[in-house]
Length: 294
Image (cartoon, rainbow, N blue to C red):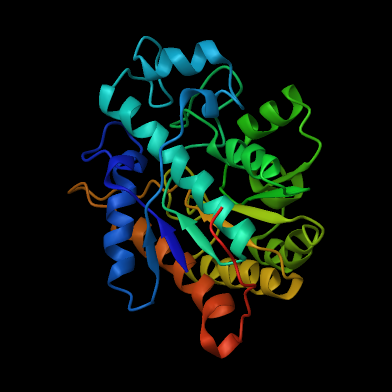
């Protein structure tokens, strides 16, 4: 597996209710302790032109120059400096998985509420859609965005509709009326079918939000055991349908009194371990095509 990480995509210290800005570094530290082999991959930040593929140019320039508030509802220069790296991580992971078929991770959060000309709810630039656009330009036909964050990816739908991105298929747990109205067990029984509907795409971008956990202050309805099953189902079905996948972390807001986010990190560990066990481990016999650099 490959993880696209650079220290510049992480902002130390909690800058809002959400721990997302500083989470990448903490997630990487946690994953390094798991004993799972993976490669840390460097990448380039996105340019303003890249980001503007999915957003109004005035909005992009305003956020990056700190003259307009970001998704954290501040004008932090540190956040502004990190955002091109955050988006660059997701794009690099998506491109890599599309070309090599290797499972990749972008340890980033804060995308799916970002609309074409505005941010909000801790989301500034919608790097899920930016990645879909850029991978499509690199040769992919259809791209799937599988969003299992507890909340509706309204920004993703806004951009897809605004730009008429017919090649993007989007499922959002938060936008599925049956998902929250049914029991967790009933939804988990439906999940293989939900993932299986992406069998005809060339790449799946998985937004693996852990705010779906029952103890999350902004979520959720899945127990720790059910969250683990969710991840195993996703990656097992992905293996069966043979579609490349890259994963983003999305939401998770269980911040302890001392400011640590151990419950969130454990849930992100589960996602990482599940990807390894279901797809990448030698026991599964996962075969990748020979690849060259893009």
